[in-house]
Amino acid sequence: MGMLGFEVLEYLGMAKNNGEICAIDRWDYVFAIAGVCTSWRAASLDYLNWIKPKIGLMPTQGFCERKLNVSGFLSYLEQDDRFWSATTVYVPCGKADRLYYRDVKAICPAMTTLIHRTWLMMNGNLEYVLEGQGRHPCYRVYKHDKEYIQGETAWIKYSWDGKYKKVQEEHLVQLEHLVLQKRQPKRTNFYRG
Image (tube, rainbow, N blue to C red; front, side):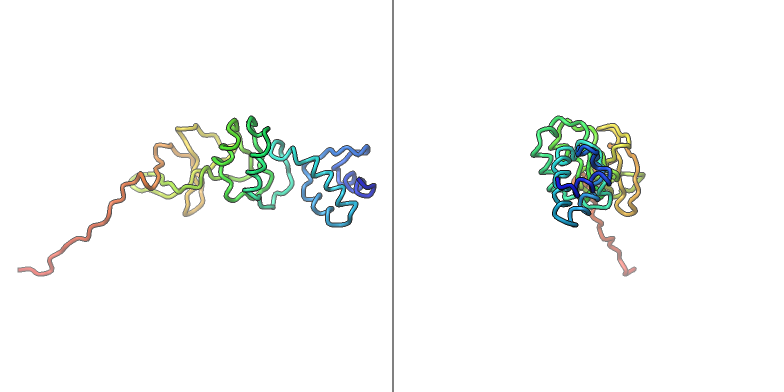
């Protein structure tokens, strides 16, 4: 690392006095300093090479407002054998649209916890929850700090208002399982007599 780049990392709390990189939660700073000059770019590349093996296995606090490249993250999980036996996987970015729990579970079969700051969809399929005599469209969702019993209960997100609720799995049905009754027009006789 160039001396100036090292001093920047030390000032931001990302490196110790001896040059050892120590912090893994300053992602936004890395991209900010990488665009300033060549020596700062070299320092940020050393930092990124040090942090890359830890992505997904350790919590990070940067990138809260950044959008996750879902296909890139999934291919990263597939390339590293450590995720095959990992029980906890951390999603590094705050916005993870189209990241489904089932896709990560397929790559990481030993995973029991997928940590993300917001709700994640289980599979993206529209289902219906039967409540009373009506059925309401919803999606199954997952969040690491919300308890559920696999096969008995599930968390759902209603499609019309976005509210979350814990329901019994027996009340959830998919569209192909519903028997949709076609309305028959009522025939009337307008002529009397």
